[in-house]
Image 1 (cartoon, rainbow, N blue to C red):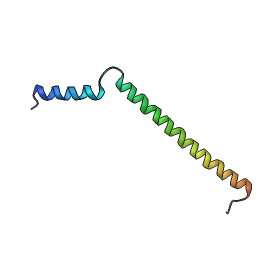
Image 2: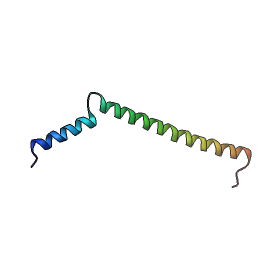
Image 3: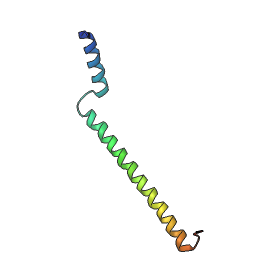
Image 4: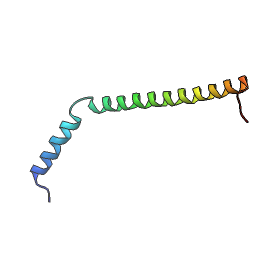
Length: 64
């Protein structure tokens, strides 16, 4: 079904994409850092919304 040339081409593509020592760990480290930054920003936004709603209740601007 697959000749040796097919497997050599697949191996070459895999080596080009992931090529070398530490490449996958670097990619995963970057992914983890981006995920942590995203979570921090989401938490900051929800905290800001909570603070704004607290300020409205204190100042009496609550329309309920």
